[in-house]
Amino acid sequence: MTASDIAARISAEVDRRFDQQIETTIEFSAIPSTRGAEGPAQDMMATLLRARGYEVDDWPIAMEDLRDLPDCGVIEHDFSRARSVVGTLRPARETGRSLILQGHCDVVPAGPLDMWKTPPYRPTIKDGWLYGRGAGDMKSGTIAALHAVDAVRAAGLKLKGRLHFQSVIEEESTGVGALSTLQRGYRADCCLLPEPTALRLTRVCVGVIWFRLKVRGEPAHVAYASEGSNAIKAAYRLIQGLEELEAEWNRRAASDPHYGAMQHPLNFNPGIIKGGDWASSVPAWCDVDCRMGILPGWDVDACRAEIEACVAKTAATHSFLASNPPQVEWSGYLSHGYVMKGGEDAVEVLRQAHDRVTTAPLEDRVGTALNDARFYSLYYDIPAFCYGPRAEKVHSFNERVELQSIRDATKAIALFVADWCGVEEA
Image 1 (cartoon, rainbow, N blue to C red):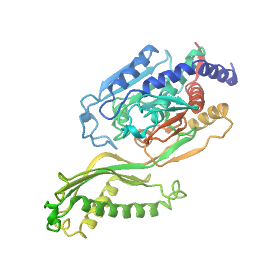
Image 2: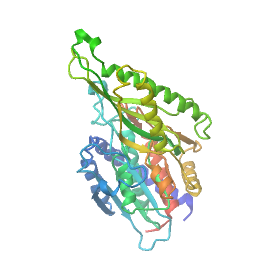
Image 3: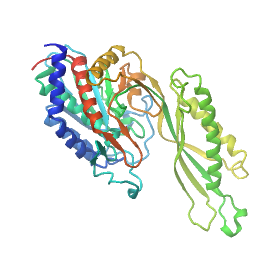
C-alpha cells in the first residue's frame, strides 16, 4: 500500500461524500450559535460524533477550574450553559502519533439583517460560494475536519494514533473553551485547527486584549450644556489617545521578525459604545468596549499597564476627567500572541499533504487576528497551527466560504491525518 494509493483512496472518498459534507455544513451554519447560545451547535456536534463511533465527552465548563490557568479571559455573561465536546478515536494498540483536531462553534453577531444579501442563518450557495454567518469562521472548517477523518475510515483504513476531535466555544471572546479541554487533560503530539486560512499555514499570531472604558460626565439640560460635561464627547478624547498608543505600538512592530514587513499589524478597535439617558440631557456616562492587538513576545500585564497609563495621561488633559478619572475594566481576551514552538515534522507532513491536493505551494500566513492555537504552543508544548478553506467577509455582512477550497482543505487534512497518525487496513 503506497502513499499514492492511500492518497487516491482517501481523495476519492472525500469526493464521493462531498455533497453530504456540504449539507452538514449548511445545517451546522444555520444554528445561530452566538455567545451564550452555543448549546444547539454543541448538541449537533455531539450527535455527529456519537453516530461515527467516537467516545464522546460532553461537560459543563466551570470557570473556577480555569481562572488560574494562563491566558484565561474574563467572562461577564451568563456562563451556566457553557459546554465543551470532545470525541476520541482510540486504537486498540496505539503505535502512531496522536492528534487534536479542534474547531470552534461560536460565531459573532450578524448585525443589521437588512445589510445581508441573504439571511445570515439561512446558508445559501451561489456561484461556488456558501454564504452565511459562521460558514467561513469556522463551521465549514470544522465539518471539513470531521469529514476528513470520515474519508480515511471510509477508505478502509484505521488510525494507528489516538485522535481527539474537539468542538469548543468562546474562541471569539476569551478562548476558555479551548483552555477547558486542556484543563480536562486532553493532550496530543500535534494540534490542527481548520480555521479559514485559504489553504495557507498559520503558525504565528498576535495577542489580543479586551477592555472597557467607563467614562463619567456631569449631567445638565442641553440648553445649558456648558454647565455640564459630556461623557460621550470625553470618551472620544480617550479613543484618540488610544489611537496614538496604537500608532506607537505599530512603530515598535517595524523591528519584529514576523510582523516587521507589515504596514499596520496591530489594530485598536472601539467596538461597542453605550452612553447617556436622554437626547436633551448632557450624558453623564459612556462605556466603550475596545480591542487592542499585541505582538508575540509582548507581556499582557505590561501592555495593560501601558493602556492604563495612556488613558490616565489623556484624561489629565480634559477639564472634567482630570478630576474624575475614567476606569479601565478588563472584559474578555487577555491573550498573548504566539509563534509555534517546534513542530517542523508536522509542518512537513502538512506540506506533503497539501502538495498532493493542489499545485500551489504551501504558503505561510502571518495572522493579525487571534486563534486558540496559542494555548497549545505557549503553555503545553503541543505544536499547533491553522490550515483550512478560503473565506471572505469574516465578521462582516455576507460572510462566505469557497466550496472548492472546502473540498481541497478536506482532502489535505485527511491526508495529513492519515500520514501523521499512521494508518493500516481496517
